[in-house]
Every structure is written in C-alpha cells, then in structure tokens.
Length: 130
Image 1 (cartoon, rainbow, N blue to C red):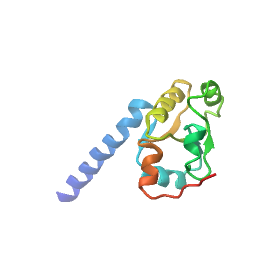
Image 2: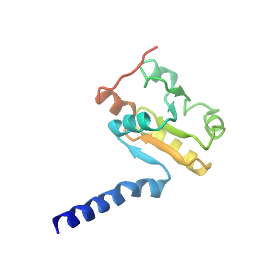
Image 3: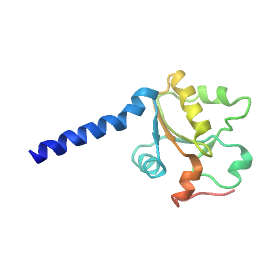
Image 4: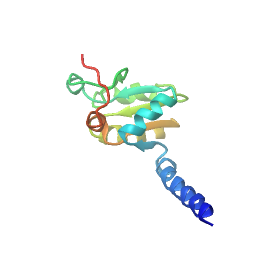
C-alpha cells in the first residue's frame, strides 16, 4: 500500500511540474535546474541583457542579444526553431517575454532561467567577465 501511495504522489508531483511548460510552451526553472539541463541537453545559451549589464559578467558561453535593442525581435525570430534555447536576463522579466515571443513564433524547446542572472550568481555558479 505504501509503495502505491508513493507512486501516486510522484505522478501527481510530476504532473504539476510539467503544467507550467504545457501552459506556456516553455519551461521556467531555477538556477540549479537550468545548469543541470544545460549539462544534459545541448542547446544555445542566450543572454538577453544590455551590453552594460553584461560587462558585470555573464554565464560562460552565452550568446548576447540585447532584448531592448531595436533589432532584437528580428534576431530572435531568425534563430533555428528546431534547437533548444536556454535564455536568461537580469531578473527573469525580459527572458519571460522573450520565451513568449519565441513560442508565438514556433519555437518548441525553450528553458527560461526564471529569476535570471541574479539567481545564477546567488547560487555561486561560474560566470565570465569581459
């Protein structure tokens, strides 16, 4: 009986964790899961912050697209829709908006660092500076 309850509990928890991705078309995750997913599945890492913000550091290997730039939407929608994208900004707002833009434009594999670069730094993960 106990084993059955544990299995049911795990299935329910798993359903709730997938609800966000089903509802939005992308996955919001914390820093630890973001890092883990990047290590498990190859993809494109994109920093959506401004050049001034990036001067303070970024996640190693991130491509840079300033989400506030006039050509940002064009750059984003021209990306390969078949690839997996790991996106982040300073605190999660811009990357959430970017994830929604990407979903509307046919992207399927998007992972958003929900609380942004600040969460990454708080977790003590490696950053690179220019």
